[in-house]
Amino acid sequence: MINRANDNEPYTHILLADTLWLTPSHDALLSTLTQLLARTPSARIHLVAGFHSGRNAIRSFLRKAKAVGLEKKGPEWEEIAVGGEKRKWGWDVEGENLEAGEWIDEKESNAKRGKWVVVGEMGWEEKKVENVKEGR
Image 1 (cartoon, one colour):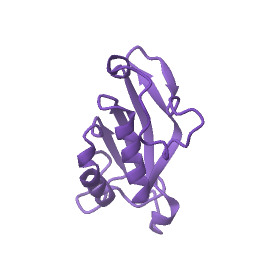
Image 2 (cartoon, rainbow, N blue to C red):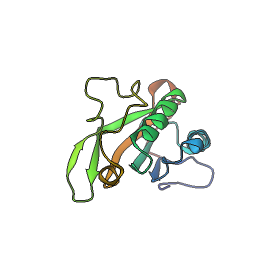
Image 3 (cartoon, rainbow, N blue to C red):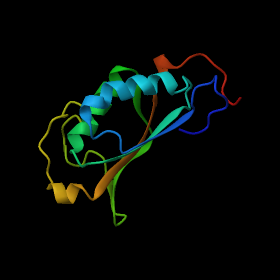
Image 4 (tube, rainbow, N blue to C red):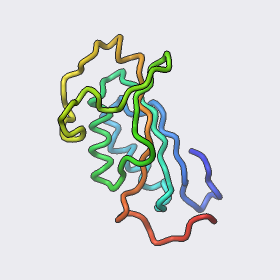
């Protein structure tokens, strides 16, 4: 976590790296995030997640995050390979609703998908943002 002004203020930026593979921990993680992330329009969770337990674990987290008021933000989410190759997050769903298609079959072997991560940003949906001035 970064950008904390002092101990009495929430974080404006949180780095969430390699924390989504253990799906039973999603609820506790989201509880912590909702307590720590500032309720401002620009507050962000910067997410990087590998696919060791599959893309479905990440889709499950995103569905639960949406239920507590967090949504995808910023530039388009993408997958990045160890060699630098990039592709759009959700390439494997093709025509399905990405969040509704949470438990779809993997289209890559464990060995292939283990060479990729997803990168994206999350923030509060508008109705969850407090009426505060930013730029303190």
